[in-house]
Length: 556
Image (cartoon, rainbow, N blue to C red; front, side):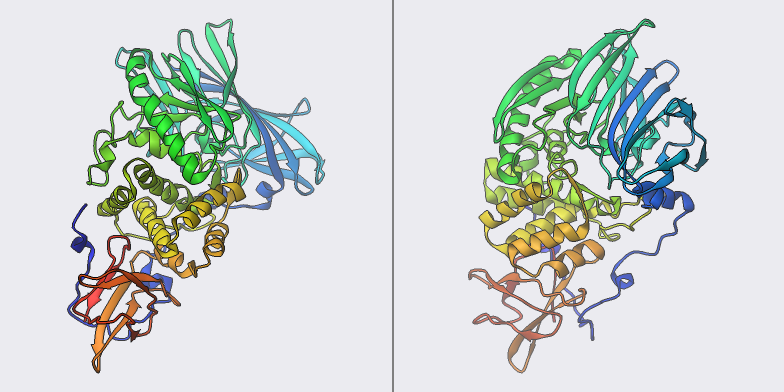
């Protein structure tokens, strides 16, 4: 455990008149400028909302020597209104060969990475229809996957080709034509990847068929039976070997499929089996059943650190405990388990089962999954260990800008969505002060929003209603503003007073305090100075719980 005093702000002056800061500009980040391309990528125009995507058949051939891809994607959709024109997305460096509808080619225009297709007659509201996009080109090559997007073309340690896709953030349209917005997940998909002879492809879902093609390639057909977001759809091509197992979970027998590189088979069996099984036991307890029993659970070795590809988690942690052998919490607890297996699999519940409608709310994915790490630690090493772990991650918090990003422009907020977000959720648990109720809320989220895309308000409303606590200002403070609130203690006419400063309007977060040597009790300060209702408390002997609360403390 790190010294809690590192997180106490001792200020020697009084912030005169600062009871609350209602203007987001005061606590937030500088205004950003966005382009037409950002709007096309991130907004929900009528050309996107006019159709609901039902099914994809993505069929792509990888020419590894030329770093070239070619193929098609079938769009099956249901019209949500009458229309004659729609938008899908494909990066401009990839060529559209043709768009086919009922045997004829459709006219289209392109603007940045958006493609606008015009149909020969009105597609009527409620009707089901389809079209196919044929395309080819040299896709964007990812230089630092998974932090940048694109295709990874590399070789394994034996010099054999090794290819992977990773496109979270930038979007799946960086390598295949799709309706590239998180609000509309396809209901099911067939993913057909053709790889050069001697190599295997591993994608999401279940392997349906392997076909040897006349040109020396082999096509692997993978079917995903559940809704899936665009960036989760993956191709992994390499000299893979397969082994399997099962897990007796809350919904019955879950298939476990493992795909390491052939020469890492023994390492994988030693590292993956135990970590994956322990992860499932922990997360099914805290979050509810694994959300994709129909598609199974897979780990796939990848030439990048890792990614939460639904039902096919990409893994590149070199079969080490921790995060590439390091403990991100500095406590020692993070070295007792494989970070990538646990964290990326945690996204199966938060990110894949529950998906934010707009990338501005990626905290819904990352804050909960970061917090899941501490719950995993708690499961096997006790609650105190889990609390120490989440507290230790504060060293990485930047407080640089708001965690919630700007809506409608495909832009995430601060990377603090990980560690600050995890600490926020631990604070919410502390405020609720009922671990069974908290567990019920986490499981309830995954049941209520099962296989859905969600908004900020839906998630915060649910937690607030189920907890019975006034949590909206708490989430507002930590997610919409960059600065943390400060708990100020002072005295006047022999009375000890307190208030929250540097805080949003109506901020009244319950906080645990104690007299030195005593036990913690809850008080509920507001942004106005009020007496501390704790016997014997003075401004000099009162202590706030800065271990479980990520706050500043000022004694005046």
